[in-house]
Length: 67
Image 1 (cartoon, helix red, strand yellow):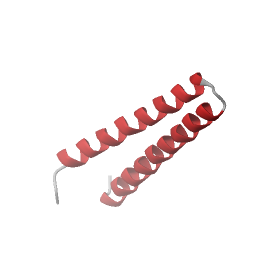
Image 2 (cartoon, helix red, strand yellow; image 1 turned 90 degrees about the horizontal axis):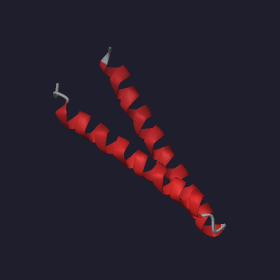
Image 3 (cartoon, helix red, strand yellow; image 1 turned 30 degrees about the vertical axis):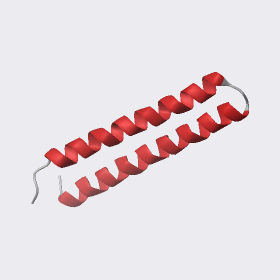
Image 4 (cartoon, one colour; image 1 turned 90 degrees about the vertical axis):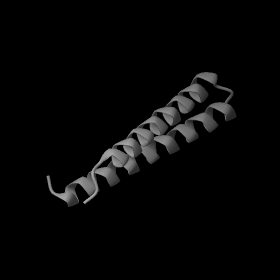
């Protein structure tokens, strides 16, 4: 796999994780606005998943050998 492909893959993952976090924030706010605790909790769960994925990406980057 070429280095450019890896960079694009990391960028794609980062964008995907940020989108999931934003989606979670919107769901949480919508749940709060409509007094829907299930939607609010679902939004928090989406944010937590995105944060965990971002943390895993940072760990992978830290362990990746530098060139």
